[in-house]
Amino acid sequence: MGRPENPTRGQSSLALQNLRGVVILVVLAFHSVLAYLGSLPAGAFAFDASPYEWRAFPIVDRHRWFGFDIFCAWQDVSLMSLMFFLSALFTWPSLARKGRRYFLAGRILRLGIPFALAIALIMPLALYPVYRATAADRAFGAYVRHYLALPFWPNGPMWFIWQLLALAVLAAVLHRLAPGVITWLARRCALAAARPGWLFAGLVAVSAAGYVPMALAFTPMAWNEHGPLALQYSRSVLYLVYYIAGLGVGACGLEHGVLAAGGMLARQWPVWLAASLASIMTWMGLMGLAMGYGLSAPLGLQLAVDVSFVVACSSGCFCVLAACIRFGRRPSRIMNSLSRNAFGMYLCHYIFVVWLQYALLGLAVFAIAKAAIVFGGTVLMAWGTSSAMTAVLVRSRLAGRKPRGLIPQPAVAGSFASRKTA
Image (cartoon, rainbow, N blue to C red; front, side):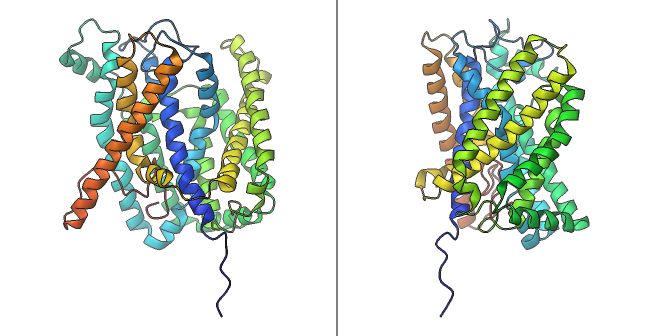
């Protein structure tokens, strides 16, 4: 007789697939409400004026709701770190299965080429309304001249893709030169299945060591762009830490490690929910105090803000993962479709967000209604665009031709690595 079937086998992978679908919806919601933050200035940011704050807030609407500020602050703390963590989960097994050469070739095809085409085509189309909002000459030709005169290549949300590609290269280097590092980390992550608090404490400690000095040196919000590459200096090491953590968790196996369906992380989800709420409120309170000082906040307060940010980031990620493993293990056709199309939706959604926000500028309705229209329209159009492009790729393969489209295989979700393509 064979071994009895494990009833939890594959449930963690299914839960994480559903989580990818949820995360791409959160990303679209985040960008959809940026035009309606209560903290924005009265008017739109000029396209040609430094420091080019339209990079963060492309459209500024006169209708506002402060609740969106809280939502965006909450998501800004942990969303991107979680995305880098998810991106790395299947990378180490993929390296072992494919080898470094084919792994890197696949990453360049699925991340590098879409990034280059997005910078060259998608971002210029997406930002035309930003120029029109403040320009005297709204002609497209004038926009092209102003766009080319910018001292950088606007990235928008595409910065995540090139950084994910850079981290994939780093993973291949580790696989070649120091595979024992990830093996050691995988063993520690396996032990954390019974005591996830130890993994949390280690992640907080390493994250603080990487984030706090960078935040003090460059400030938490500063961005820099060199040609087509945008980078938030304060979080560059933080994202590296979460990516490497994802490598270790993925290397130890999803169904038997800290993300196991029957593990302590999933069973302790109320604890992580409480920790997430307490830490995010602590960070918001300290951040509010620091903002009252402007650029001259005391060093002790700056340290408190930065450390509380790291704790809120880690607890937020653990809360989402625990809730996902506990409640997200049921198959769903909608979540499956969102997961398969997440990368395509991430790639093209910014066009729909910005144009819809611009189109609604003159509409006299509440900010919540405008945000709902932008979000709903963006989801439908981005989802439909990605599905259509995926269908073209599938038909091309069935016809025996090499596909030349932008969208990678559906298993890549929102640039989050998957079992098949990471």
